[in-house]
Image (cartoon, rainbow, N blue to C red):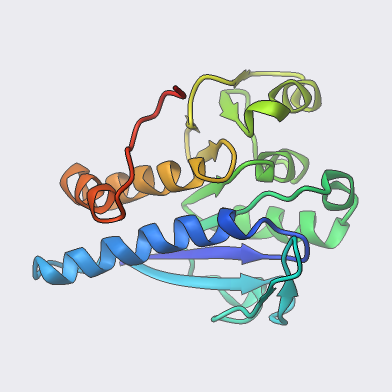
Length: 201
């Protein structure tokens, strides 16, 4: 079973968290219905284990406490945020992402979470993406590699980045495919009534 930890922090975008969360839970539910092994244990964590306030004021309480207490996680999913300046200036957040990212099998980001991965030293020289509006800024920050504006998710080894908001759903379906196979990923997309394509329309 793959343990997937979704990181919560003050100011994070709610859909960046709940989109992948629902995808992974739906994949589990379908796997149970098919009487096959459930592919994911889905966790939400925060830096210190305390509740956070997402963008817009919604409170979120982590199901599994502090990020540093989840050393057994296989995947880390980092949501985006509106106030990039605050995120990039949050040393504790970046250090937490960097430490966790060094111990998991795969790191993924949604939307502007790619900026946090890069600032934490986790983005390599390969392809990456983010919200289409922020692609030029990410390309400038990275100063290397290819930053794409034509796909909903990009893969560079064990790092997966995705575009804005609902692209996190598309990226999470990719994670389902990688862990449990294409049939379950496609069935999950159908179950949540989502048109799953990699290319932006």
